[in-house]
Length: 110
Length: 114
Image: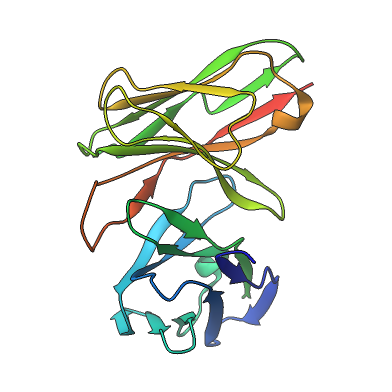
């Protein structure tokens, strides 16, 4: 079993839609959780970071962690064509071990 | 603020040739990493370093070597390139400890082995 599982998509939504991206993880010891956005032919860039459970909001983006179900989510409100990218979830297991999902490709249609 | 810089960005190699990918970070990070990213397989860790002069194997180290002679640089070498090493390579870095630790990536190096 992989440490982090992520639906690869692709996910196609109309502009203005609310997008929900999700991952599950296997190890209850994981404490910090990240979302990266990766545009085509670019490196992953850190989008959101959360520690332990709860929600974190940054503009149109909300990251949510549910440690009881080992589920992490990223919500994008009022999605824009510029949000079209691959989104990777990641978690840290301590000692700088990072585990990444395989990425969900999102396409926001104008 | 450059962050993590990789060179070259694109390279085509013939089977059996050697090359070195260069990575530099200006964030004074202790930890540095080399990943490869392939379709459907996500990011896979090749080698990593926990500090100057140290290196360690990751998930897919075979066919690669690394060196960390200076804290800010991490080099990835391919001694005898194979078509299976066609991939995009990402260098990354992070601080050494603490909650709030996150990993930062470079822009990638696209390598094709023919």
